[in-house]
Length: 204
Length: 65
Image (cartoon, rainbow over all chains, first blue to last red; front, side):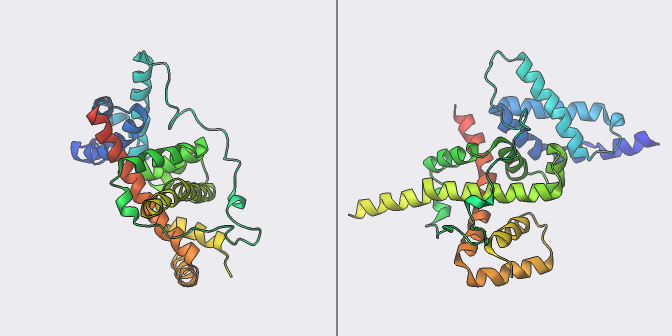
């Protein structure tokens, strides 16, 4: 009986729905299209074969990510590369010593608030913007970066991110808030204010 | 009255579809009068979009190599 339910849950179609999320997760870790694709394939195959082991206690996606993590770990074990980018795994300590005081007065008003950005959409088409974006993202404290990436890059839902990171819901909100404040400020300083001054100097 | 720190937290929650109707109302009212929080709102939406695009961009970059 239970096996039947598990198998239903585990139809190819159901599994395939999780492919994009799993792929982004793998890509961010492995930084290689083919390897990421392989890891996802192996994960889906393993999940399909082990369908009867899935007890439905965890969400299907958490279970799949668990398998994917093993596949990625296998890859690193096999790999000769020694430097592993400590992206989504291995980081847990530090809650990011910074807090909103960097951005707000004790009354909760902006220190120096967000100014308007000139044509952000255009930035998305520029190669240089992505270098700045990545720098800003890497400048986040590790735990904060992990939460932000799981939510915004991988595309997990808030409760899934909490499960992955062990954060409470309240801490999750605070972390996302801080991440957005910091990313926003970094992009403003390094890109939007900068490109403005470059344009102005061209006119001069 | 909620201050800008509170409002930006609510904006952040709203981006994840987790705020209540009352919270969205408070945000809507606040950003009518506060251009800084209004900018934070627009720019946070943009950052979400950029973050999503980043993985596509990364995929393309890796492809080229």
